View 1 (cartoon, rainbow, N blue to C red):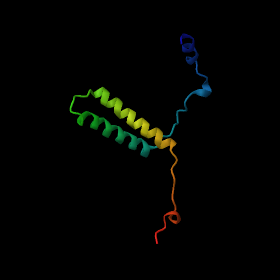
View 2 (view 1 turned 90 degrees about the vertical axis):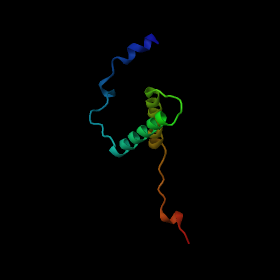
View 3 (view 1 turned 90 degrees about the horizontal axis):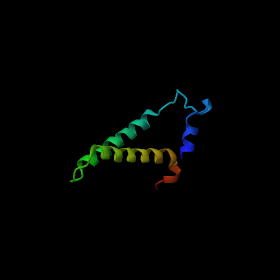
View 4 (view 1 turned 180 degrees about the vertical axis):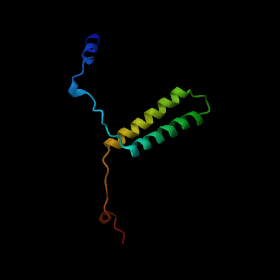
Length: 86
């Protein structure tokens, strides 16, 4: 593993993250709300004491998982013809 440490020090200029990265504020708000709700529930619901750091980690895990699923899972749009009621 020591040999791999030096390979990450010099990153070519083409690999750097652009400074004008656009964030979707609606999705960011959705993930932030989920983080707050899950972290709060982790602190309040259990009868035994839970450390704040552990509650934050559970909240981060939940919101990250939700973000990955939200980005990867395809969204299907159904047109009225598919759900036509007689």
